[in-house]
Length: 73
Image (cartoon, rainbow, N blue to C red; front, side, top):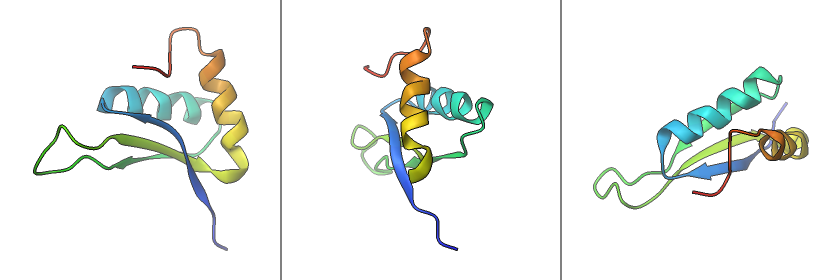
């Protein structure tokens, strides 16, 4: 069975992506971090947190409701 993963969060900072992933995991939303940073030029690219397409709405709501976590950088 193929599962579709979609981007729920993006940041240039690895720690912010890890925090978002942890928020999802604590609320039973499976999540993975995809490193899209350029290895030669680390100023380009970002870390993306992906969730299952069926969990996207829940993931976005979790980030909006998290008082200590803001999506903008």
